[in-house]
Amino acid sequence: MSSAPFAVEVNQLGKTYRDGWFGKKFQALSGVTLSVRQGEVFGLLGPNGAGKTTLLKILLGIIKKTSGDATMLGMPAGSRGIRNHVGYLPEHLKIPGHHTIYSALELYGNLSNLSNREIRERRAQVIELVGLTGWEKEPVKKFSKGMLQRLGLAQALLVRPKMLILDEPTDGLDPRGRAEMRALIMQLKSEGVTVFVNSHILQEVELVCDRVAILDKGILQFCGSVEESAAILKSHSSTIQLNLIVAGPTTEIDLILSGTEVTSSNVLPNGSRDLEINVVNQAAVDGLIDRLRAAKLSIISLTPKQASLEEAFLAILDKSAKQ
Image (tube, rainbow, N blue to C red; front, side):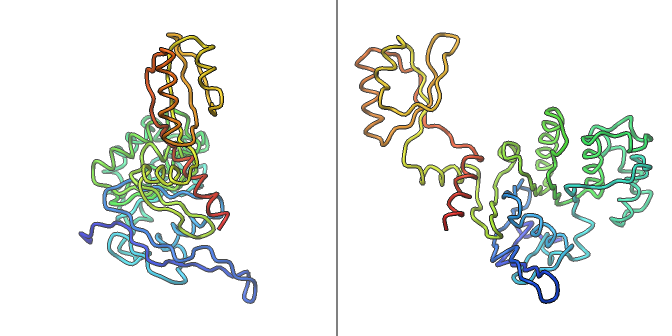
């Protein structure tokens, strides 16, 4: 295996579909260039039809690229040599209902070129990792959607992957299951496994991913850290968003804030006000502080509001729609 710093390298990748032999062409990917570092958790984001699944299928060798280049683990995407080192959890993994955990792992393990002996040696560990101990001999037709998702993850881990590709990994999981999935992803990262996550649940992505890529209409709109995405949102905002916690008479606070856009206001147990406000510029921030101090109100905290990945995602897509 390659010792290169990148687990995935994509350069000017393009994919064009055609509706029949002479039908209309559809550009699913257009000039996508990105890289995934070894040992990081990388998130792939985008609305439906953005090209995310097409990109994953090219990396896995399920479909062929039209143009550009893509490598995974130092080898051309789709190479047979990659398959024994990559675990894949598809979004809708179909497991026939007559299978048990044991027989399902045997089936998928054999498809990954594992011998029955290797499968027997590894299965107890992965079953425990995904929280299915005690269900080994039950038919999967009795399993809930969340349990089937756990079994899908178990088969992906069976090969002891150097890279794990997860397509909507928290689909069907309850809050506890999602927390356990996050913990497992972080454990795998600590062991040096590269994790590539495709998900529409941005809150989950924000909690685990080192960097994210945002696709829209087959074009890469952003690639960087969550913090960098928030900085892009800030650079496009016409106001300064602040979180203000202040103590004092409500009437005085309201009077001072008259003319200031207040987007959220809550009374805390100690009686102070927790507010989210928008101001036009730094001079307006300074003036607000001066007025609060002149009224002898206690400014408990005044901090810039941290933009969420979801807010940045929507702002980036909005910009894409206007181009």
